[in-house]
Image (cartoon, rainbow, N blue to C red):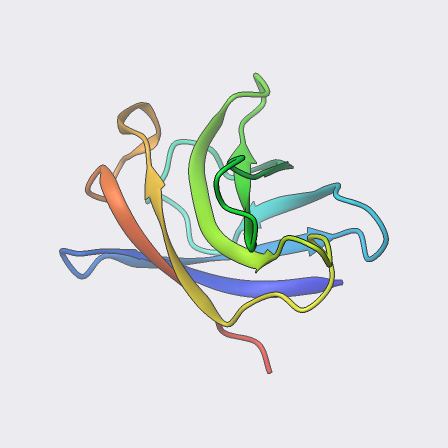
Length: 114
């Protein structure tokens, strides 16, 4: 399952990525469609959820070193997995070591595909 997602900061900077997720499990990959906003242009996806949030899970975009730098919160309901019923929008964070044009800190994300 491939999705196009727009990520933006609160200063008006935005770029798109393609997210390919496994429909059955929790694996996948991501690839930037617009370059120069974050340090890396592709990598793996890591599923993550906080123990106190029983409803939602998030995905983290990881770089070549396996460490994440972008977190997309409220990605999907926790009980259905990464590849099923992805929400249409949410918030998240981008970490300082990953930013080029984006402002580090809080971001928003939204699905662009139908």
